[in-house]
Image 1: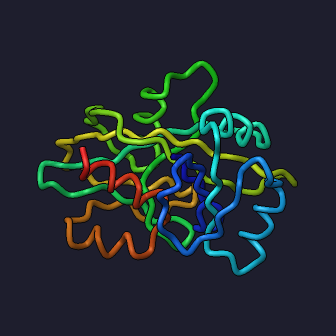
Image 2: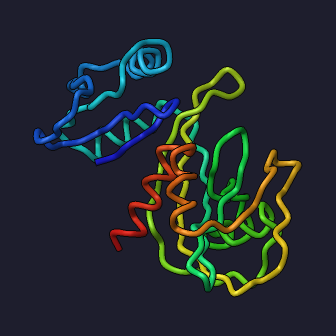
Length: 199
């Protein structure tokens, strides 16, 4: 199964008939991607499930409709078992960013977290999940593919949010405050936390 968000409304590609949801159910081979995007951005559709005969083939075809942007980021945990959040665009998020040409996914994840939060002493942990969302840029729909890693830190330094990236706060939150932050976050960030707690 693949879950792609557009304006916090999901497109779910699956080969399973056992999907319980009030989302629209469509056969992938009978769909037009541009119409799906229009329905999710302009209509009242809560989400769309695309039933695929061959999931991997359908996923490859789906991705071919977009310019794919690769990014990576981290779910950072300190010694007090607090999670690192950033605040940008009116929502709580996790630090992440584009992978530069010639850069490894893991290297990009560490670099982006350091740059966006002014943090050092990061230890890369295990891979958690890859998330997807569609956004509109330069008159073109793009698919961002973000690879997430667990990270640990022993730092006690003052965090410095990367203001030029629109980040106004970088802060560690305890479990209770993290749950509150997730109420004002993105669908993909919920998936990252879910992957962390399920490992």
